[in-house]
Each structure stands twice: as structure tokens, then as C-alpha cells.
Length: 154
Image (cartoon, rainbow, N blue to C red; front, side, top):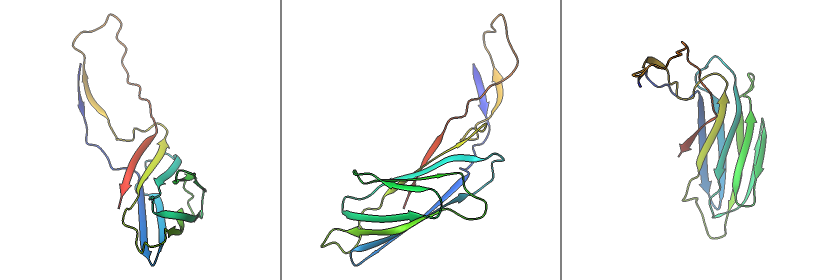
């Protein structure tokens, strides 16, 4: 079997993290929005990141969705669907351990989402050639969509 693939597309979401640190405290702001409309709704949007070990406490809140911080310093922001009237924003402060002025290690943000009926990569099969033809050959192509995930680094 051989196949030909068309050009891949960009991810439909954008993530804009901003982290500033000064005098033992950090200010965090993360915006998530739709970059290009895929034509179908983007569901189950989650953003998670590991807080650095030098962070002693965190006070994070969002204008849409829920924020949970686990005991192993993993922060998860569950957005769901992006509303049309406002851009979801996660903001808050991180308190550093005593003796540290600035944050030296920045977290990697992992974003997950689902789009029903569309492949995340935009992968399309342009041509399909079968070398050995089975006795019953049916014309058609069926695709299965799974959740996608990508990383955002500062």
C-alpha cells in the first residue's frame, strides 16, 4: 500500500504565556484563543504545567473554567469550550522560596483539545494505491479523530 499526503496545517489554538518575576514574586498571565476557525467547535480544552520547585505557593484564578493545583505542583486549567464574548485568561501570582529574587526555570505548558470530525494534523489522503486487491473491495475512507496535545515553551 502507498499513499500521498497533502500539506499539514497549523494548530487552531494560540497560547500566549507571560511570566515576570521580581523581588521574590512572579506574575503569571496566560491567554488562550482560537487562531483559525476549523469550522467545528473545539471542545475539552485543557492547559497544564508543572510549577518549578522553587515556588512555595501559588494563587491562580481564571475568568473562564476551573484551575486546580495538585500537591505535586501540577497546575491544570480546564477551559472546556472558548466563549465567543471573551478570551479565557489565567492570571495570578507565584511566591518564590526565601532567598530567590527571580524565577530561573520557566514551565512548559501542555495544551490538549478535541475537534470532532477533523484530524489535528490536517492529514488528508490524496491518493491510495492497493498493491494486492482483496476479493471484496469497498470504495470509501473512514477517519477517527482523537484528542490532540502540544507544548508551548517560553
